[in-house]
Length: 363
Image (cartoon, rainbow, N blue to C red; front, side):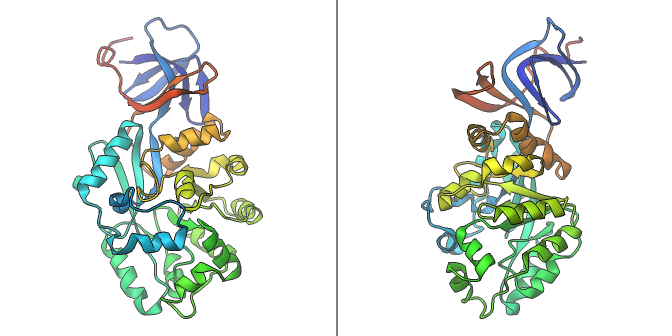
């Protein structure tokens, strides 16, 4: 039992097909042909497998619109205040549902509190990661214990917010990729490269001698005992170093959240340079505290307008994350498009459902 469709373009496993007919069975392509199939349903756009938001903080959903843009990292951390992790389930549910309708069906969320199961809409997959941090040796054990009690795979929040003891803990074996905030802002860059700046002053309230790790050694160690090491944001990473690390560490990946970076810092990752590493890139949104939506569609549109081809965009949104997370079956229709697949002002993304009149029709 097959359903034949003829989209303007079809993305599947790293390749973009144009003007082909596709036979779908149980949500999977079983035949792709350039031959004319009269019964094929014409689709006015580009069909892609559904997408994975590889980095967000669902627990910050209630902060949407409450933190002004351009603050920088230290002031953003202060602005979150004691309300961090207090997002009501109905707030999380609402935006997950909206993102799902635009084709983002799986999410990887850094959590400091438990994510209630009833906050997740039907058909959506969420992989929570329990993040731990702490510069003070006095609170190292309590913070790590709290993260373990959540029962999720563990990941350090970042490399700069850990004591020496927590760096040793972070090297332990894990079955899910480590997802680490990395060179997100110029404050972090000043701290990691020179040991000075706003972070140096900010950290003094937690530790008289905050630990600044030897970057190359730490990256190798963290990647060695994990399926992959994800460096999230990487907006301010020195490119010569980044190229070296990507070359040396085959399971090193970058998770880009360009719209969130622009909101907080009026900066974005070096997208044109990173296009050369598109096979090692995933996409995220960060939280609703600094992004307009949990849907990947605005990010994909931004990448296309920045010069990325559709193949590279869909590889980062659909293919790469599927190595580590089980994504609900389904398709996204990006339409309408021009004949050369350029965006029209009215172009949207929506989760595509096979029409009922075609379901079960023998071909």
